[in-house]
Image (cartoon, rainbow, N blue to C red; front, side):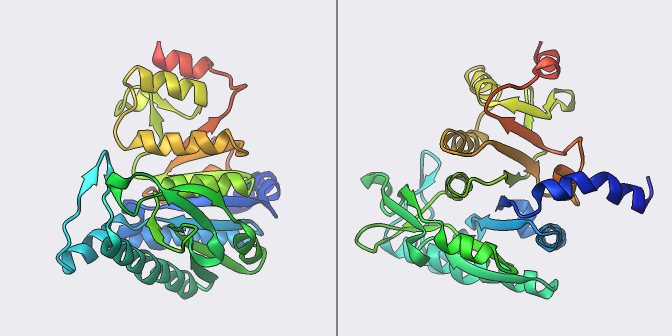
Length: 292
């Protein structure tokens, strides 16, 4: 297919998303490798240029770890969540908002786009309460205030959000980036929520490529988890998606951010690229063939 034919085939999808909100959670190797990072941000800038209200939400685990090491702080995890004392919370905010966030803003601007970097503290965007005393300053999200996000997204700039949270007393908390991104997508009633990871999507028998699931539902995900087919770090991502889909979000996509132009293939082709997750009403013929 030549370039004109490719653009013509993509036109219905471009029109579908024009003026709509797409929330992208960005992290993992797609953010640490310079070449991949440039490719992802170029795709995001293209989406914005096509009139899509892109909201970029990011984590920053590696940057936080590096800063903690620099200051002689040992990383401690409890059930997969980082224990966060007051000093660690301040260092995490420095890494997220002062290093990762501004780096993304700078790189988007270098590509010719506009971006505004903000954190969950700004405008009390991400309100939290303490998740557990055992975890210290780790927040459970109680409310997402979207006004500041919506105002930026409707301009020529891309909002780039660092996922720190703030409680009623003004204390700063560490917040899981996947959870924050999914909650933001739900509150914005996003047309699509895309969670970039380091794998293609969901599998019924990972890493067997024949078991890749191009589409699935929340019910089938619960079934796969119960059967032990999905485990580890993928479960918190899916739990975050599940919560958002129970509170306003219609569809979500798990997508390999390390594959060149995966965002473009996902949004602007009929085949897609990652795993599309729906609430229900999905034709499970292909799924049943893969899992039988």
